[in-house]
Amino acid sequence: MDIEQTLITRSEGKCELCGDTTDLSVHDISGAEEVNAKDRSALLCATCQQQLDGSADLDENHWRCLNDSMWSAVPALQVLAYRQLHALSNTAWASDLLDMLYLEDDTLAWAQQGLANGDDNDLVCKDSNGTILSAGDTVTLIKDLAVKGANFTAKRGTTVKNISLTDNPEQIEGKVNSTRIVLLSKFLKKA
Image (cartoon, rainbow, N blue to C red; front, side, top):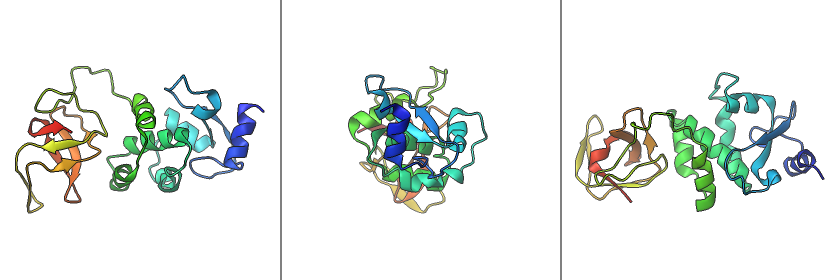
């Protein structure tokens, strides 16, 4: 059985991310070249394909479908969901979904392989010990920090999971006390 037919059977003839049934085609997911082709592919509609490859403008409301598809047992779909939620992490709903998403270590490594880190190698975010921080890392506060506008203090030792990087290599974003805040990387250490 060829890859497309295998994926049609697996997906029951629907886009594996949004559920659309029109204009379906095979999408190869970058990274994990050691994984066989059918396990690193997904059956996607034209809308999902075009937004993933950048040939169409990103419609963040279309991606609310990830609320369901991110729970797939298929690692390839978990990787696509993680990458797309990461791309949309500046929106509250996508950031919340990304915080909830759990991936096995090898699947997470695959998902992070495909994230665009840009060509600016000098824009590397480092913690207080000089360890490079990546999106999705867990960090710990090394100092009590007053959070402006939120009327609380983030205490030393607080763990911040699934951080997001910003355009500024000295800052990260993360949730403390269910509030998404910007933290200075010099007050963090990688957990």
